[in-house]
Length: 378
Image (cartoon, rainbow, N blue to C red; front, side, top):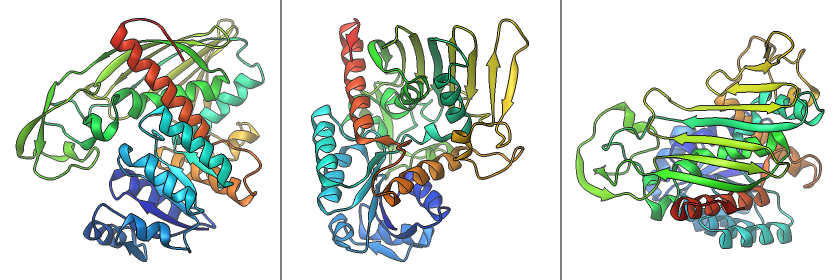
């Protein structure tokens, strides 16, 4: 299976590293916003081909699959082009900028016969898959509440800047769409229940930010100060509180922030049922706390000998050998390419374009709720 990447920033590099660790997959090229960026990226990731343009990439008949890691505004058109060219597609989230776009992509993906996925990689921490299995077999009883947070600090200061802060590049939502949707996808994936209503209170901490000379790769601005050249207006959310209702009547609460000092990339959830609770922290991803009223709380470690067969499918190392953030990409892509190898059949543990479309429906409900100050049905 021969693969090419479009996008040479932070996510492009992460995809490249994960793909190189997958058996049966060959990364043959990469394409950036300019031929110079393509060549620099190809040299950096040791890919044999540096495409001069997007058109050159999708015209390459040797490319079976395209990984899309470009700014959000390009996801729709590039996914359309790739599917129309007969390629399988793994797209970074969000799938598109609007539900009209994502709905069209769902239709095209189904008609094309190609496998199309959205990179909600955080599903693939082995213990989150373990949590899903335990919920499904009734170990925690009836799911009653799902609460948690996703917090970072890489946009803490007014001088922190990246294309993601701009609505025309990212979309109207940022913290919610960029990281909050990971948490919501996980909550729905593990519980098996869909969010049906939402009440959102969002805040933009900085109405303007300082844009430096040139573009800034995601997270790299923390490495040192850069000279700001101009103030740019910002309307996207830095933080927000979401109250959620699920189809089975469960309640949920999510706090999301990209301006919390000391939180580097911290996703936490607690899923409470009628008999037990499961608690997870992505900055300590190789253990999960099982809470109980009648006996001492227990810590379950990531260990093939202790975990379910479903979780073991996405482990490569024995107990005591940590698997973390980078491994979640590898395992997401493993599920994706196993599906392609099965002719599009078999298990679809990864998020599909339909899942990506539903996340955009939810984001539109969140935005409307925050603007109107009321509950919105999803």
